[in-house]
Each structure stands twice: as structure tokens, then as C-alpha cells.
Image (cartoon, rainbow, N blue to C red):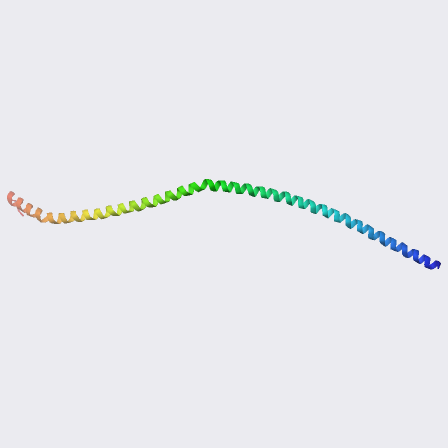
Length: 137
């Protein structure tokens, strides 16, 4: 019985030692868990701060972009009107140039025709003067 008692005490001692090791591991894991939980909380806080900053920055960029678009809209309209007027002027001047070319061609034809009609008259006039002045042919 004495042996059993000693064995039993030895067993209790070993179990107590194992329990102590397990408890110390549990405390260590709890400490690590708490540390990780704090790091996670800090990361979450930082993420929320960054998210808020990015949202604010995006809001400011959107406002600035809207402001720029509002200032550019009239200029775009004015530019489109100027382009339309330019195209109309180019078309108008092109038509005028074509009209002048056509008119010029007609005038040249008239001058050429008159010149052809005048040549025989001039020849007869020169011949008549030569005879009057008695110049040799």
C-alpha cells in the first residue's frame, strides 16, 4: 500500500507538473493572443483613419473636378460655336473664290473673242494706212 501511495503521489506530482506546463503555455498563448488582438485593433483603427482620409481626399478631388468642368462647359460651347462660324466662313469664301474664278474665266473668254474680232479690223486699218501713207508692204 505504501508503494501504491508513493506511485499515486508520483503520478499526482507528474500531473501537477504537466498541469503547470499547460497553464504556463495557456498564459503564454493568452498573452500572445492579447498582443495580436491589440495589433489587430491598431491596424483596424489605422485602416479606418486612412479610409476616412482617402474618402475626404476623393470628395475634394470630385469637387475640384466638378468645378473645373463647370468652368470649361461654356468654353466648350463657345469653341463649338467658333468652329461652326469658321466652317461657315470657309464655305462662304470658297464659294466666293469659285465664283470669282468662273467670272474671270468668262472675262478672259470675252477678251479673247473680242481680240479675235479686232484682228481682221486692225489688219484692214493698217493696210489702209499703208496705202494712204504709201508705205511698201
